[in-house]
Length: 73
Image 1 (cartoon, one colour):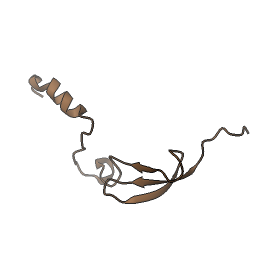
Image 2 (image 1 turned 90 degrees about the horizontal axis):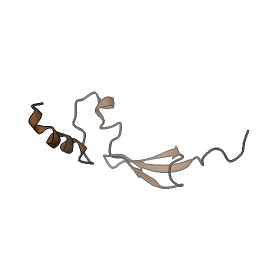
Image 3 (image 1 turned 90 degrees about the vertical axis):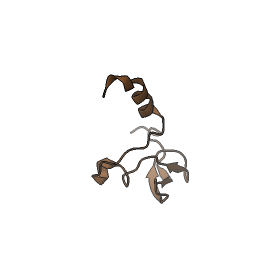
């Protein structure tokens, strides 16, 4: 088996959308870094079973709606 082929696996802090912070193992970032999530399993409709609306952080949905506003969708 080759040496130095796998990334470092360390502990990071993951900040959920409700403000709670979970400690998880990851290859992302460095030891002790904090990853802030825009969407997590506690609010995403795929896991909660609701038909909630997702936040349009990049403005892509509004650009799409403006572009095709006259087509009668």
